Amino acid sequence: MTTTAVTFGTHLRQSRQAAGLSLRQLAARVGYDHSYLSQVERGQRPGSADLARLCDRELGTGDQLSVTFEPRPSRAERPGQTADPLELAWQGVVATAGIADATVALDDFRGTPPAALLPELVSELQLLQARGGDELEAVELSILIAETLTGLGERRSARRWWWAAHASAVGAGEALVCAREAISGLAEQRPLPPLLELADKASAHESPMSHAARALVLAELGRSEEAHQALQMLVGIEALGTRPTDWMPYQQHWAEGRVCARLGYGVPGCILLERARELCPERWIGERALLDLALAESLAVAGEVPAALATALRVLVELPDEWRDLWVDDAAERVLRVVPESERGAAELRRLLATKGRSVGGGSSWR
Image (cartoon, rainbow, N blue to C red; front, side):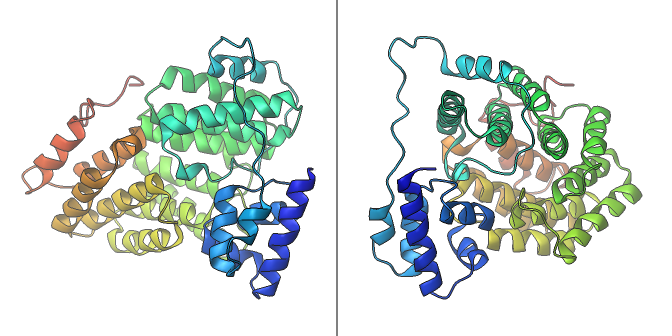
């Protein structure tokens, strides 16, 4: 715990209380998880310049919080280091054992394009290893690296990092890894039976993410009744107000909306995904693109095919190149699967997808 972190966290808490806002209210306004803000206020997390700027805006504190916040030292490459940073980080993870579960994530990683995010994640993990710090965060970082590599099409490297996450996590942490790998595997178009095994293993621990993973895989398998039951359990957790902090509200609505669309419930899917869009900060460009494409799929299922294609086309035309990855392409392909090939706009959507060098509907190397 650093003096800087305590000073910034204390100032943030005082400013929030003076504005009459709860942690959850401020978190919703700035797009951060409330548990993360709580850790920042207690000096357990350093915060970020982006968080300070957003809180200044929402709390009306001018630039006081931004001035109070002091970024962590530069993570420049150590003198004499010539090996690939990703490989060095991998070696460090392999050498680490006895890591428990994970509930924290890298500061606002959703606001960074995948190719730029990967070096940041690696630097964060190297810094963590160097200081012998938070073992919980190491598992989360391994998951994020695996997911980012997957999005970049580096699936072989991603598999190593999934292995590292599994090897390091125990208990609820292992359930987290299983659930997120199952969801990632759907985007990769991996064979479904092994993904269901992962989702089933995750469901041993009650959490929105584990139920979401199971519902998504079951829906993809066409096991509608079981998928519907898993969806009811997912919605039930939210209704009881027992949602853990390992997943943000918009992500849960995204999963619910996708399952609804796969089960043929287009209108409920649209409602859930519109709610997800309201909760997802606009600066999270990649996340919002996925939500819009999932909404397009639900629109098509609901019979609003022209609106669905218009939405999907807008996303691919307007999305900056650095945000186009496997996740986005998979979501766009799902729109194509539920619209007639002869529909006006379908050919253009197919053409835009082909510009990334992927064969639409052709699967992946996992098949």
